[in-house]
Image 1: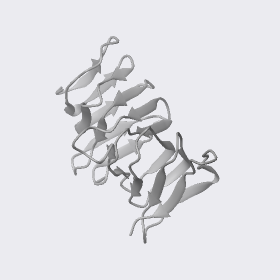
Image 2 (image 1 turned 90 degrees about the horizontal axis):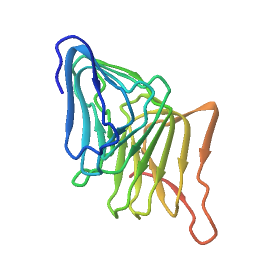
Image 3 (image 1 turned 45 degrees about the horizontal axis):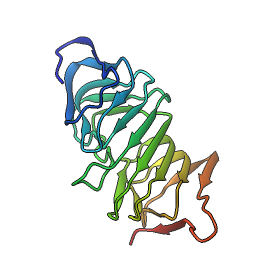
Image 4 (image 1 turned 135 degrees about the vertical axis):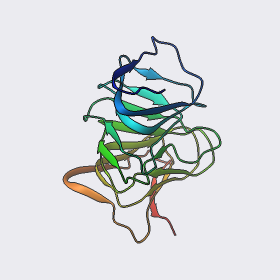
Length: 193
């Protein structure tokens, strides 16, 4: 998706996209006009310009914006992003390289996985609101980088969540850490090696 200036809109109109979408709008804004729905095999990437989800919910296999280009992600503390784990990648969220990135986190990010592979949330030392890890899969969830969170949670256990070894993960003073499990299906908190 490319635009030289102004505000351009993406409208799914209730249809699930089944391909990679790259926002490459240097000098322009790309805005969602309805909920963004894509298959688990689809990705959404921000290369240049401004991505404004406009408070809409997003469901996609993978989101990435790990580069050094000038770009803005305006989550505006609104909307829920559900990442279903794009096949072939173990990183449902990747903003590891944040040079040139202006970032406002969405209200909630859910990393949902049904596989046995390890999934890595690469936050790029940014501040996030609520991030939850869920799904029927048995793979380990890992958080990379020194991020801060308002809330971290695990749903639909049993799952293992690993925080980065020798890095700092920050929870604010009124933050919540929710590892709720059930008898016989405990959730586990650990560290990467």
